[in-house]
Length: 242
Image (cartoon, rainbow, N blue to C red; front, side):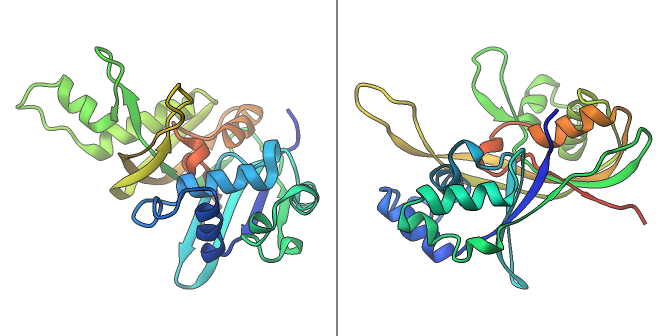
């Protein structure tokens, strides 16, 4: 497997909205999550070098920033942005020299770590293939007397996802949940591309994990968890256990 890097980019939200305006998305992301907007900007800024999965972090104490995993390092992203980015694209990252990266370490079997992952926990219903909240799918499958826990449904789902990569989810806690509006464009058709808003669940899951297969664990970080990873979901952030 190629080297995996964690990237950090500081962005200007006002310049991001200006970029979206120039792209014809004016007003579409004001009341929705910025997932599609950041996705569109990352593609315009870095092309195939764009980090994925990634996560937008915004709080009152720090400027907005994007964290992401990529096989490309900070220098590769800087060169692409400054070499090929339109002015409105470059303005979203006001100081490209501060794009930072670090190589992810080698892992050992049995290592225990804390994790946090922002997810869009959805699946497709067997009967009609419609995408739906995993919790609601489970609730549809059981009788009315059975109590279904959202935390349990999401916890079992993340356990299965981790197991695919030789990782044991020792604990899972649902520390945040809300239903969000997401902006999407449909695929090309004779009528062109249509813009629409959809409602999707957003769940913040945290806990502790144990690495059983170090190589596959790196693959998990590079791939991310769940659907809609291109729009800011599924990046596994790690922390040491005290």
